[in-house]
Length: 243
Ligand SMILES: [Zn+2]
Image (cartoon, rainbow, N blue to C red; front, side, top):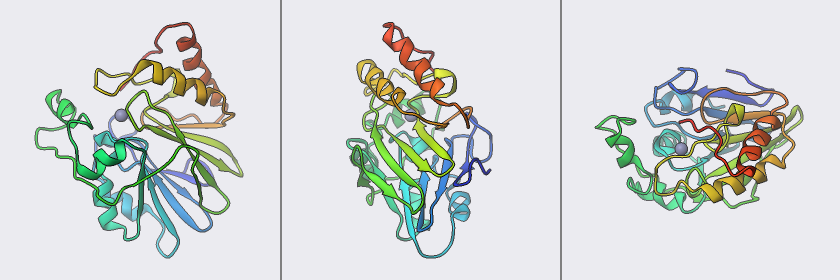
């Protein structure tokens, strides 16, 4: 599904548009002149579909993970196998948990117990994942992505800001959703003060599009979603939370 001149939606599950496996988050493909990047990987069952959607041929190939939860990072290992040379990135400490398949740190055990993931779901370790640092630039040629550390939903959560000729888009993962909703969960690394700081930082950005990990996508005037969440936090309250 083409969203902008440079961005397509290549997977999306039940908390989205039902394009692929129900467990999948939104998976985006960003195309540049000298390479491409996937933002997030889905849970794993759709890896072949996602791999078939990326351009053939030479050029840089990146998989930029927003965080380690299985609906976003569970497909990383399968994509790394299907797409030789794939540069898989995530921020610490999530990177180490993804590399090791540390299910308790990634809250996969809690998700299985709650029925979010099927009883037989296992998180495949992705040993090739490398760290991405706050402020790092990934230049795809004509379009540039910037990593922004945004802990709160989970440790190691990163958003990616895209500068493209048609405008600026924020891949917000599970940090901020349309309408200023957030995702605060009863998990070991969901942290309110960090969340508030991350959202305040994002709300300082001028963006056109908000491309979150689930639910609606906003293609214009999208900063309003960020400022709405920031303003609720600033009053000492919690924005509405979603999954
Ligand atoms: Zn998450």
